Image (cartoon, rainbow over all chains, first blue to last red; front, side):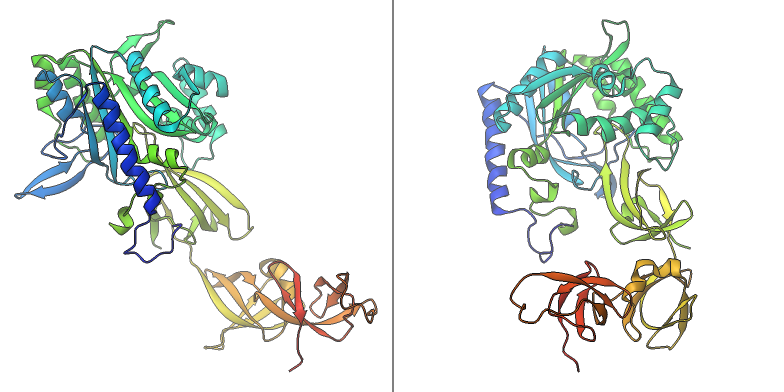
Length: 319
Length: 190
């Protein structure tokens, strides 16, 4: 830990908290000007995410297990299906076991949805918000494939399993042998490509179909199925993750079930999935795009802070 | 032996990696939002002093290394081994030249050093931060030159060579910082 102050004291400076308050006000103004409705949805829920790599924190409510929301996604999508239109959430989200220089298990998330938009159009709005808040004009947009080809001369969609594994083991000192394509890609992304991204705003799109999560899968101009998912990075820091949203209820049900099978196979906790989301999609959720953004990290970038505890008054060690 | 999971890794923790005892220098949690979690760790190999970088899957664990630091008095060198004694128990340990390594040139009898024990045997020796040693060889002193900043090499009783001010003579004692090899001042005889 960087700070040696007594544990009752905040780890963030008064200046950082002023910057936080101003940032939250800026975000709310940004959406008010665009007529996007701020909506509160539960952070305490009987259902949890099925994401293979995100764990929920479990609590007890009147004796029953409940989960702290890892994102407001299910609540906001149910509002969309109910016809509420463009909406956003700005508040807390929670993830089990995520703590470090860029992570705190309790963090502030901004998530918003745009009805009738696709991922490309939403990427532009993400770029506008980021350049307004950070005062950065340099925005570039490139595909996941282009990034890998540029830095590693590797096509992440077409390379063989052996080529991917060989590349991961050459580029990163590993204590284990990577077990899957996605593990190789995650290693290369976090160890090699994020640090190489530069200081501007990078909007990365068309992820491998295997990393679609809740995005649609479409065929790109080379005939490869890709996830219509994007991420925003600034100075190598991952800030936002967005989708052209899946609206097909049956496909949603299949992905939940596939996530459950994966988690069970990996001996991870299997949480009850949100069948009410499947029902909402069945009833008809409008075509839309949505994105989630880490506000603490945005504040780190806006204020030039190196570690997340510099922008959170009481991080988990002091909470 | 106990083992530690990646979320328990923190600076100074002693673990086994590739059969060698290591001390953790840094542990960074790395996780793409929708991807797998890793820990990117820097470790110092306590045998070689080299720093390794290694990435683990979050939740992996390493066996603890039976390594501990003890304060011990340096006794003597028998030509092959360096002998140390624990001041409380009078228990003696002999350390090889490999374990003592660069510390050898600072070792003065009765000085208290930190001896790192691995499976009960000395693995490394850290001399006191400051030592007081006698000059055994140097060029003749230049009187009246105390104000000027010039230095000259001087050999000390333990074999170390340090830069000292020009006015110092053979037989005088000096205080030296062993971490930097820097002359700190003249020591009073007492």
